[in-house]
Image 1 (cartoon, rainbow, N blue to C red):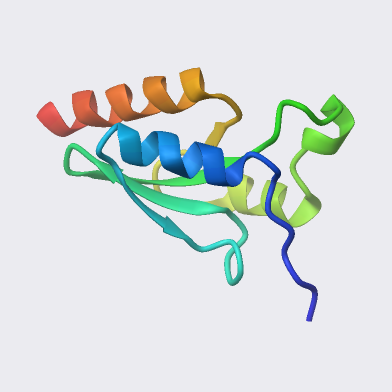
Image 2: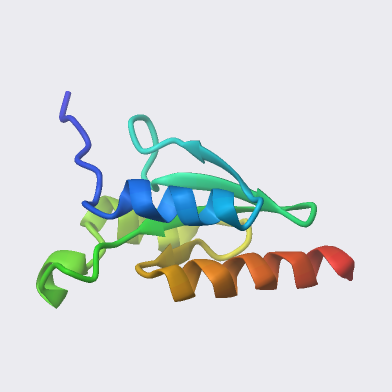
Length: 98
């Protein structure tokens, strides 16, 4: 079985979610995405990409792309930066208020 490699910024991204008082579970060892994140009563699947990598290395793998295309839940969120995380948590809280 292939071992999943985490993106180099994943620990930083997790810490940023937690600083925003979001719940985070790492699922990349057994799923086609990296994180399950909860905030404001909303739960999203999250794919972490490292912006320090060349764009070609940040593309979704075929397995990830297939999941993104066929997933019937809410859109899987791709984050690379702290700004992405901050916007994502704000969006989750807004959706939770509806």
